[in-house]
Image (cartoon, rainbow, N blue to C red; front, side, top):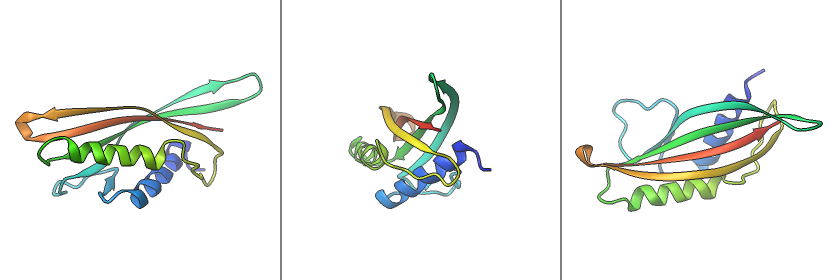
Length: 126
C-alpha cells in the first residue's frame, strides 16, 4: 500500500497542476525555466484522540521567480492557497480528513535576483 505522504503529494500535485499556470515539480531538472513550484520537506506525526488515531502531515512548497519585484511570486502563492487550502482531496488508499494552510513567507535573494515563497500546509489522514 502506498504511504499516506506519497498519496497526499500526488493529490496536491494534481490539484496544483490544474490550478496553476506554472509547473509543479518534485524533482526540478537543471534547465527548468522560472517561475515554478517545488515540493519541499514532508513531516509525519501521529495525532491521537480518544477513539481515533490520525496522521498529521506537514509539508512545504517553494515557488521560485526571477521576475522584477515580488508580484509574480505573491500571485502564485495566493493561487496555491486558493487551490489547496481546505480542499477536499481524494486519496486512493487512505481516508483524507483535511488540509490547511499554515503560513507563507516571501524572501528576496538579491545576489541571484530571485524571489522565493515558502508555504507550509498541514493535512490529517485517517
